[in-house]
Length: 406
Ligand code: UTP
Image (cartoon, rainbow, N blue to C red):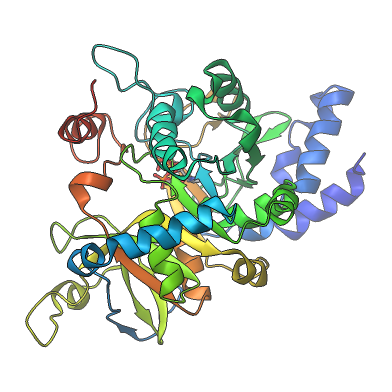
């Protein structure tokens, strides 16, 4: 058991002694749980206010656009299918997020978007994956990242649904790490007298969490050379798309990023570019007016392609950056916490910060990226909100357009 004096000293170092406020009231088990959590927690992430990373010189990056892809589609697809059939491709589903904007209690993937029948978000993803594995003639390994907050519910749901017909022996779960959540003065909240408030640490740590969760043994043993990483909430997501895999391989790139043409200069998608000559993504909230209005020599918007959280990484290069330092994003959040009387309080408005690293920052750590355009109507139906933009409503419309019965 972590020793009380050592944990007290650790908290003092980070100005977090208040976390022991209720210590004397706790049972022995609760004391042990609190000390263990303090021992496990990295308090160095906690900071006050937004981070002020200085960006390098931003310039446009060339994009492989739809016309070019369509002209070489058969060649790309054949090359991608060859990789899949050789067992060299795995997929990683990022499902550790909290989905707070959607506001449903369970994991996002168990959300039912059907109208006249049940149709779960996870089901859409498994079906999309099976379009490819049926064509290839073999399943691929699918690694699913969960967090402490949704792991059990995710695993039991998918078991109960029998992976929607996918071969369960090819599905593996791993948990991402949690990070402490703090008030506006950088004081970590308690969500119980013996438990710190925590939040999943963002989607940027997926590869190191795969390593910690023992997933890389499977990657190594089965000879996987490419990992296609994708978000849980895009129900039109194409997974292990052979055309994308073949194009990235034939371009000799170590990363591929699926992108869409932006609908408007201020659309809320991360924009792909070069930063100091390396591929990079600038988040929508960091976009300057200059970037939004910049034009190429032939008068087109210079930064016109947004990422859709579907990336293809080459495994050897990933292993080289697994311990690289990533920028920390400080995000305002509603954090359940104890009130002055020690009772649980669920705020209606943001009351502090969570700390995250993001997968899009991994792109900048790598040397070459194929920017691969996809048709937004066919591949981009994100579900972030119940209604309005990027919502259950808009995704339903797009699913119908693609012939999916609801
Ligand atoms: P979002 O940025 O949309 O975050 O995640 P979210 O937590 O799901 O939703 P909000 O912001 O609370 O409404 C994009 C993708 O990254 C995954 C999500 O599950 C989703 O697939 N993600 C996000 C993680 O796996 N872990 C995280 O810590 C955060």
